[in-house]
Amino acid sequence: MLRGHCEDVGRDYDEIAKTVMMPLDPGANGEKADALLERLQSLTALGISHVHGRIPQVSEITPLELFGERVIPVAAGF
Image (tube, rainbow, N blue to C red; front, side, top):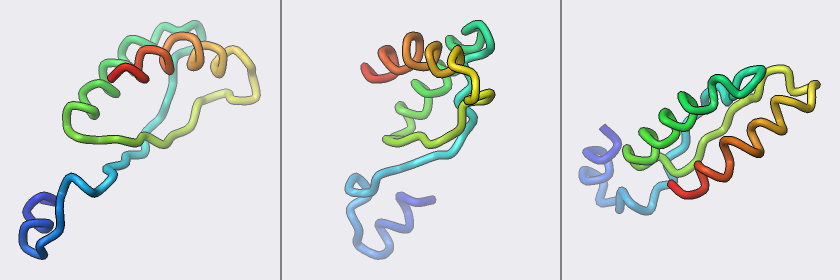
């Protein structure tokens, strides 16, 4: 849809930063990290360049640590 609109108005589709909003939940013990990474990789394949979201239970340090240890290093390579 976006690509078609860009063609209609003469805009370069590749110049647009594609962004999505989604939950960024690695799981309480990291059990959802692999599924989250699969989703992020599939979004990358679709041309998504930015993801914004929230990490559940952000008041606890563990979800942030898990996200930093298990998700960010892998997703940075997509």
